[in-house]
Length: 472
Image (tube, rainbow, N blue to C red; front, side, top):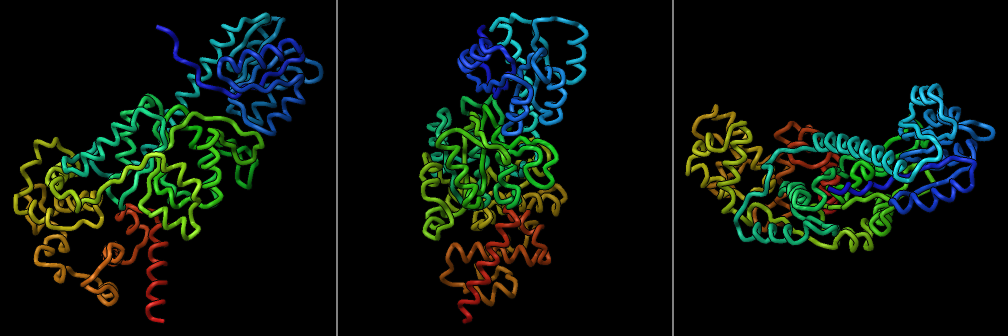
């Protein structure tokens, strides 16, 4: 079986022999790597001040600063760079000193290209494992409730599944649209699982949850000292996802500055860490999702039109739950099994037909995420026994008597008419009801609604501004 291709590395080569510099400039790019050559240690330290490197190959005997002294300084400046020492004067004592200072490996001159390739492969594999570990941590941090696979046989969901099968094995950027709670991340994971990148990392990012001041660093990384508090090099999520898939949820929350940098990546495949001047390439497929109308944001000058055309290579619209009511029974039973932490077969009969009828009659403004919360609530209230309509929250089981019987907070009842409601009115009604239920605790409300705290504040501010315009 042939070896898998090497993952590209950024390599710093330091040696005073011009012939070796030319050899590395020629041969390492043929292996897919980027290489910077330097004739001595001082030039190498200047290069390290401008950019980060995955690996450095250092000659031990050089004029001025020798390789051991450079290794020591390099590990202080860039501790994540893997260092390979190279010399024509083999010495076990020198080798041990280099390894104690953090060198990855040791070669003697003249070294063959196959030997260099083997060591670089080990470095690439080590970094790949590190990235997968970071990606697994990112997945665990971003994990949310809901079914672990797409469920639904309604025509709109069958259309979604066909689109996923069509685009999954390409590297096309995909824009997943739909209301809050419809399962956009689940669609992204399904695309990833069916893609040729499924052995690589899947890194989900909630753009709305990123700090406005640190979003660039989180996505693209930074160098030590790039800003106050940057006490070490930081690998951005684009690097963590190298060789795999990056999922940008709530894309519309990115500011214009970051939109420009994302556009640059989509056009060139290059990113640049904060504090660096030299860009470098990463091999990442980007999937995006939003519950906002990006075309409206473009008209309001809140989203770049050129970026929209880039991310909208292939669009998948996820239908709201009210448009696929025939899927509600299976979804409800699946989510109940998840809440109960039991196999599906042990809980499928716990929901009575009358209870299912009530669930199917409700409009679900919070979609699948709201259904998941309701099933968990009902499981607790029913004490794990047969589940009837009265075990659901009041606004669910009273809904069958008509919309006017739904208990609404006074603030909602006074401002939202019962007739002629728009979808935005219904969304705001649901947000305000949830806010009142949680004693106006905004972080708890945002978590229950499945949106970022920033998004909640934006929606509340827009609502208050609308009310002021109506009153004025």
